[in-house]
Image: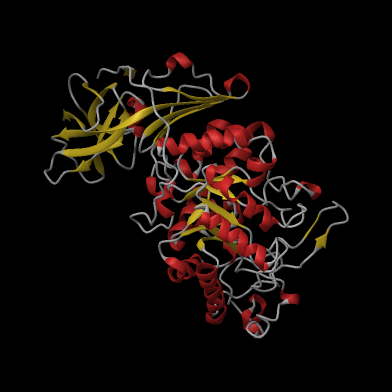
Length: 534
């Protein structure tokens, strides 16, 4: 076996002018509703938005609509559109709140964010700008003591509520559970189904963000989405650590990723990547690779909606700094955004980071780099193990990105095909390079396997696993067994060396057979072909 380092040949200067009008739609092959996998979400509010501006928040959204689109966002996660006149305060912490929409009374569109007219104006302006609307919806609970006239009669039966029947609620309680609706009851289920249809038909809803999904069944979410629009975007907030599940539940000893993916599979919706958030909070930067968005399986990556902070976890302008239940420290925030905006998953940018605090310029650059490269939710990602910090390569449809965050990875180590795209922060805490991507077909002949084995390509460059069997590229059967083939994206005009191996699918480090003799070599060109044999 002859192992050589990745080398590269000169290429033309990269061009980054990608039309913002491009927008993929639809579900994945497995039916996941991620709207084509190319979405970039803006959270269109923060915890204090309903009370922190002289004008109504909806008026501000209306005025900002062209800028939101120009900044590269495809969708806005809108605040809960329902009337909420609740109020609470804590004398010990001086915290207060109410009106945010999470303790709503009815479906009236006159809310603390603005009246029904300004709501419509914001919706129309965002739609006219080409920005899709994803509404925050809260089916689990409401202000039971102040139900509005629209719903009072329809929610008058005791079995409409969690505490009105035995074993009738299919999720966790919100706080004590007294305000929890029984979404498993057909009449309550239908109530929300009707409102979701109104949001779609009268208020331009392109998707739904489901709040507190641990409070009701994932299957219920799937049924709502089948009626709302089976090809529309949806995302769930499953903020529940493995240790919070009962000991008898298999998720109690599973990973954050496992619980998130299980919910996503059952709902066919994307899910906020709390696996990544947990590592950002409790691990170091080298452990960010353990988020759902960097899972080796593309189907897992496609389900991830990544974020740095939101209205619950982060700080907000205004009273008490918002909630900040799990805020990422300031010194990590730029690197965290560099990671989620250049890696797989569907990234979400928190409003204050974009428009209230001095981070907007960096975020615009990162969004442009992502869009130019064609990074999607399921894009391949691989990590370099031999450098400090985080070094990763992400394969987009048009370009490959090489990312170094807080790393001692030297500029002279960067393959020659990659050109600088961004350098930011003290001591170059954020560095990104890019190279044009081309598609090359790899073929392995005589790849005879037994059950549980596969044929893989292993070689130089992160795209081929840097000679690490666990990160090799699996080839597909061609229908002409024992030949195997796969198309991969690699850096244009770069020279690679590789071999075929037979490897265990379940034990990634277990190689059964190596291609004998010299390495197979090729220089990458669009439509190229390289063949090895076993």
